[in-house]
Image (cartoon, rainbow, N blue to C red; front, side, top):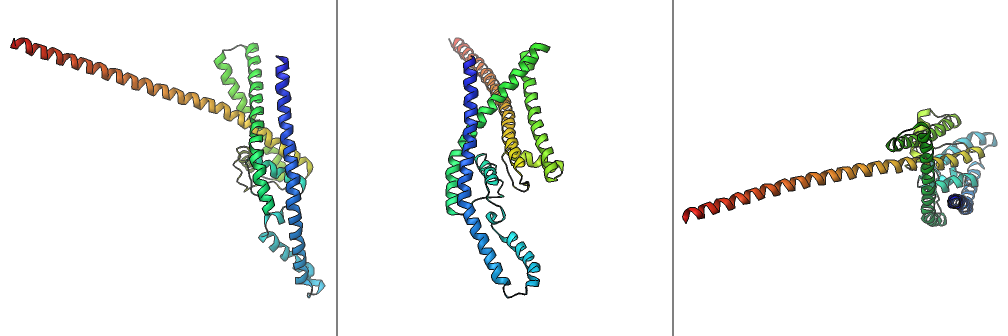
Amino acid sequence: MRCSINGKAIAAFATFCTVLVYLAVGAAIFQAIEESHENEQRQNYEQQLHELLKDVDENFHAELKAPCHMVEVLEAKPNVTNTWTFAPTVIFCLTVVTTIGYGYMYPVTDEGRGFCIFFALIGIPLFMACLAVYAQHTANFIRWVCKKLRSIMGGQEEENETVQQIVTVLFCLLVILTFSAYLSYKEKWSYFDSIYFTFISFTTIGFGDLYPQSSDTLFYFLFVFFIILGLISLGTVIEAQTTNFSKFLTFISNTCECMCGKCLTVEKDTMSEYDQDEVNHTKAIHDNKV
């Protein structure tokens, strides 16, 4: 039993490491493809700006560069306004394999778009498999904790299942509230906006109407950590709720079958009584004639 548990733990850790390596390799390839195109666009912009200002008095260059840069930011494509450095590109790869897709950053070259298709075809099922493994491990851990608490405090098996679902929801809420508090502090968002962004991210809806602007290494690390942890915790909750809905639908189905079966039985019994009455009536008429 011990070897089995260790083997499962090693397999789960190996799967997680595979996902991390896949994200890092994908980020490096995206960076190599898109960053060169981004630098080329920036050079073209600088050249056009130089041509525009070459006949203007140098005293007015600073005043003219600001509105020109504003026009560039407003009209530029995403890979001009978002730098394809390694850390942001890892976040982009994470949004691809998790299907969050905020839309704040995306490839514009044919090579980048083609590689994005290939990267998603492999990365999405790989990440989903990893997510399923860790969601199951999390559910098993919560189940084990609840079982220990039940053995200490006493209680029935049915109560243990209810407590397990409550603990799972509380764990998910803890992750959501903690990440939201960090985003509210880091991004100066309202706490409600932070909760909204966190929920939209964990459910992989990913509207993209809000996106953090922090760019330090610690933020990137915590962002990846909380996104993965949030997907695992919410996946555990969804798994539990899916089980509840399945039981509810099974109950409705069985109830409908019982009701329909009872109706058919009553109808059959009624028809049998009617047929018997007809037979008795016909027999009575025949006896009278005789």
